[in-house]
Length: 242
View (spheres, rainbow, N blue to C red):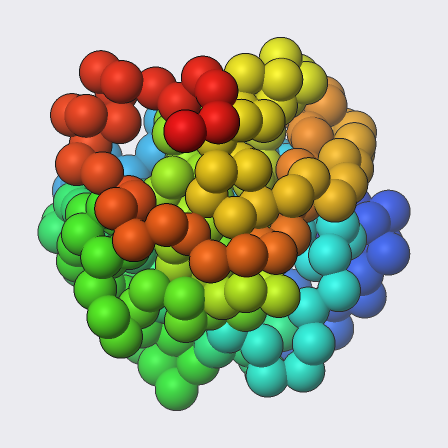
């Protein structure tokens, strides 16, 4: 369904080498996404070339931006149709991922994809709101990496993701061309939640254009009262150290 040679080239541009088996897995994932998208509204991206750039290569920028050690754990916050989590598991079968979302029907598809790609030993879904997960004892401070390309502003996303990240771990946010503006607005919140901006990596993905990956190290514990309820996060944004 997809042009696997194009995906291989885009991965190579990111410094990643995908095997034929991995490329086949991406193609099978694209077929499943296309089929189930007709039943469940998973993505507005339906063109195979757009899938290569906007779903697969985009997700793989995480691996180009940070060095994920062998066997590392991650949580994909707001995974939707499985991005970036599923591509990370296809490209790195040694990783262990929890794909978190509050929409059950999307996770039903992700479960099917995990099964169809033989990834059930490496990945699992979790139907929960991100702020609830961040207050759950066996999830809080648990993960080596939290990753997200959710549409939430970085300031809000930091409150969802940093509580799930262990001290010494990394929060990776995939952002578009307004990453710098979002980062300026989010600096106080990032610091409050125990984070420190380590890097911003910029990638150009063919016709998709610019993708900025913001890398935030978790340097200290998130104060116990965070994350707050989502309504309060939206109503009372963190604009200064509190």
